[in-house]
Image (cartoon, rainbow, N blue to C red; front, side):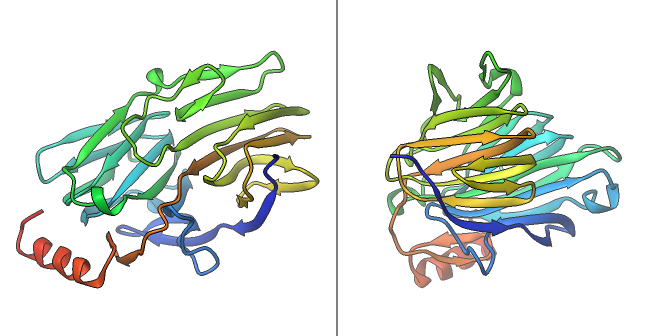
Length: 274
């Protein structure tokens, strides 16, 4: 069954961290979340004033953050001594689990800084698991190209015979970066029952009879196939995940199942137990 468009979500301009300018697609009044996804931000600017302040030390508990750098360099550090540098095309899938304090700071003073951050909820049984990092260099992420010149970068999940390098994630995620040439078209398998979205960040694409232009995201209806085309050429993220259908209580960087667990997270953070 083909997936069609359920809702069109325009990006909302905002800022986060120490003033980094963003476009928010999940986590707004029009789409507070899309189980299991809690937030999706796109950052894109060649003005250093928009990104240099970065994201200084801040805590997380109860979910995962996925950072995908398209252009630029971002330095990650946490309070346990872990450190890494994300460069153009790299991905970090970070499981905050029971809690950590980290910073994400630009490792450049000029030039284009562009990428995405996705927050993925953890099931109740995994919210207090030990933190874990998957820092994946671009060269380890498979890219599939067809005879027409369309390309599919497989970060998580599968496309054809290619499997993304992200592993050990309970919610069976699909995360693809897809670029269609002018006149290009693709049919992509999407697990039935997963909540799924398409976020267009270059050009435009058509899903069924409806066009989706740069800066817009669509939530897809259920199905097991997505048929997408592009008259002028376009690039988009296709992201899908198994819904948890569990209570969500969130307070800033803490996402748990009950108010009591949020209070405990705040106490643990203030007491230096992260």
